[in-house]
Image (cartoon, rainbow, N blue to C red; front, side, top):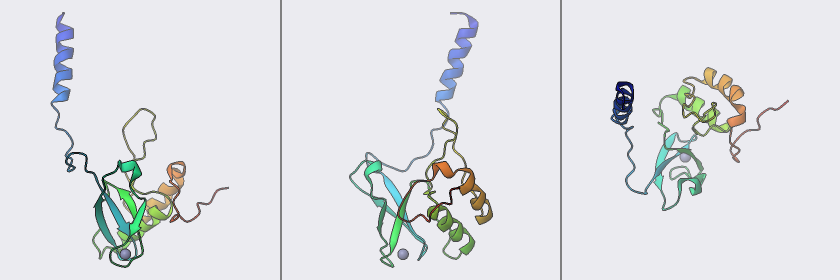
Length: 143
Ligand SMILES: [Zn+2]
């Protein structure tokens, strides 16, 4: 093994020492967030199921309306933050349930979600083909 190979091995070993992303789930349990845009609440739910079999929506425990699944990565805005909630609602209506959007094939880099409602309006157009269809979406204009 020459010096270059050894350096390469050390480099690869070093990569493995990078801090692992913090995850909260323990064992097979897996919490997903369900968000209700009417009362601006987010509820975590765990089921003894594969995450892909989790219900897409649940009854909101507060208003008995529909709380939709927004996955694991959703961070609810403050209840008083109307602008942020409008953005969240807009994204959900357009099929962006805070799923990861990875436009580059075989690349795990995902697109960051928009920070404002104005950005969200461009976002839903730009990433339209990643929108998921749910009964809660408003029809996406296709032409
Ligand atoms: Zn509700």
